[in-house]
Length: 257
Image 1 (tube, one colour):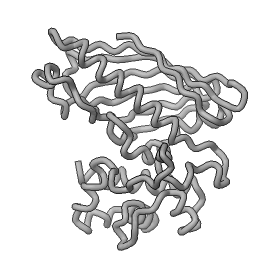
Image 2 (cartoon, rainbow, N blue to C red):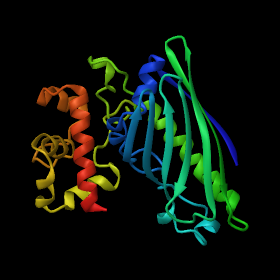
Image 3 (tube, rainbow, N blue to C red):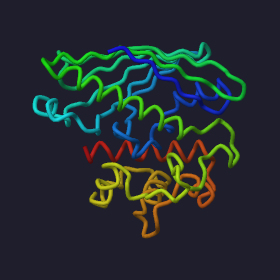
């Protein structure tokens, strides 16, 4: 199944391209629709070329006929992508953890400037080789990818260090469209896992990582705070805060998964 997506992202093209190779940005993408919180497995950079490996899992619903032959919990994969940051292009492929003989996907993405907006166009081809229901699964996965990319766009943070670089106070990673405060309890499996985690699991974290993660999820006795609130509360630079959050979660997931 061939597909094409387009997202319009406010900001300079170089800032947008650079943001999508920043592991800290992916760590904040909690609770996005149909595809679970991404986990950055590795990042290698040489000159302006960055190679990322990011683990994803499908969390949407499959049609009943497809669910009868495929286990949704096994619809997980690693996205291997190569980003030419200066050239504003990306090539990617999905490597499945399961169903490797029945599932493949690959494609490209490109950025272009359109006034004060950066346009990201993604093209890809996704194939699920399952008799009778392969097309149903393909459509479900492509729909999930589209909604996830749209939600990523809404979570966009530009490269500035002022308050305008953060999402609005209505929520994280993206503002609630109705303007109401977002429900911080709907944080994907990470929230449930962390609340159930034994306290000693946090011993492996650096002090700042433990402080940021526990405050972010409300594990320090206070309410869950947004990253913007934590920047003001802790007085940390934005990039340091995001890095502490990403590194802390990565360490905890090794024990929780």
